[in-house]
Amino acid sequence: MPSRGLYAILDLTSLQRRNLDPLESARALLAGGPAVVQLRAKGSSARDTLALLRALVPLCRAARVPLFANDRPDLALLAGCDGVHVGQDDLPLAEVKKIAPGLLLGVSTHSEAQVQEALAVGPSYVAVGPVFATSSKENPEPVVGIELVHFAVRRASLPVVAIGGLDLQRAPLVAAAGALGAVIGALLPDGQDVAQITDRALALGRTLRGNSP
Image (cartoon, one colour):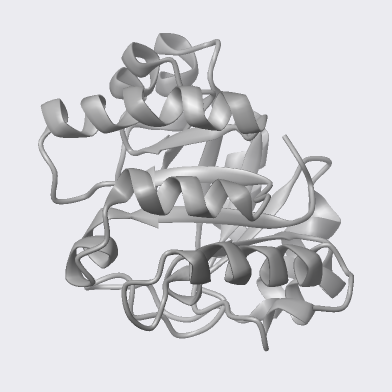
């Protein structure tokens, strides 16, 4: 699990709003060299999500990029994903580790207390956010600011992922904190030109690794 760079989230709702094909978008994204890819399919059925995960696994494997499923350790296992990401309202970390001990495990946190609780269980990484205001979720948690990212990085001996409202202008703040940056909206093209996804992923990845865009 990388500790710096672009944690790219393929959000099906965002792709559907722009009439973008998920697999075509994934190929363009992987061409941009992200550190991690996560599939977020909140409105999709388990059957459709599993089918898409199974299609993404060989693409990510060929690119040597770990693939995470959002929320569903069962689907992550069935599809052969590298890991699963869970939130505060999903299965507890300890339970996920019991049923899927072979998966990498990430968890969302929104406060210092939640960061410390997660670290005590031993995930593969801790996500912190929303760092900035975001429109990718219907009911986002209150903005926590970059300060919570610094707190998590100081306390953790594992990767930290900053999420929420990240774009190319804000990415240097995350790079300076020593965290990965999770991005949804800033990866997507203005129209339907998926080549823009590659360009945006490359620029964000360079910046989040601490290099100039």
